[in-house]
Amino acid sequence: MVNLSTVGYVVLKIAIVISISQLFILFFLGNIPHTMVGKTVAFTHLAFLALLNMTLLVITTSPIIYFWVINPFVKARDEAVLEATHLAHYDQLTNLGNRRLIYQNLEKIKAQCDRREVFGAVMLLDLNKFKPINDEYGHDAGDAILVSVANQLIKVVRSEDLVGRFGGDEFVVVISHLDYEESIAKDKAQVIAQKIQSAVRKPVEFNGSKIDVCSSIGVCLFKKNDKGNDELIKMADTAMYKAKTSSAKIMIC
Image (cartoon, rainbow, N blue to C red; front, top):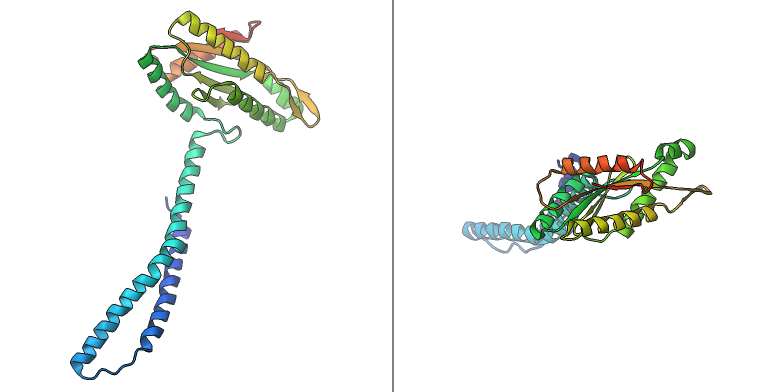
């Protein structure tokens, strides 16, 4: 929806440009000698002045209206659209993709794996004992941990893979290409999950204190595009809760 105040501001600018230009043109035309006589000549003279007035008005106002009014308005509109799109698809705290963007890209990755007949993986990561940390150090500390985890995840995964925040202290990592063989793909997913855990385990400094962070990861492999996003996430979520009770804190289904 267009902001009415912005529209009014644009209209005001255009009115100012036209008014100033018209005053300039009238002053210019008023200095043209009126030496013509006779009705026919006088009519021709008035028609000429009207045409000249219109031509000068277009020539003088068009560049100013474009560069001073239209161009800034279009730029501001495009920036507003980009900002709205970003807010709709990215988590404001970590700047990772949110649930909507995760689902959109997961569909593409599933289609790629299906077409190439290779395994991919959905990894659901949950921070352990995150609530006690919030209770002891405050929500600012919790936010600092979430941002730190997001940064570590981006460093670990490949650029073609997907990292997102699902909500709360849950993160999603989608691996786009593991291997053709399930056993090898499972081993590679295990290695990636271990790397993620090691990166996330890095202590977070907050107000002079070092806060230890650990995580549990549930992994769901996929190859054919025969499961919905919700089903894959649910399977990874089930594996993640099983991982919480395991010594490795990683579970692959």
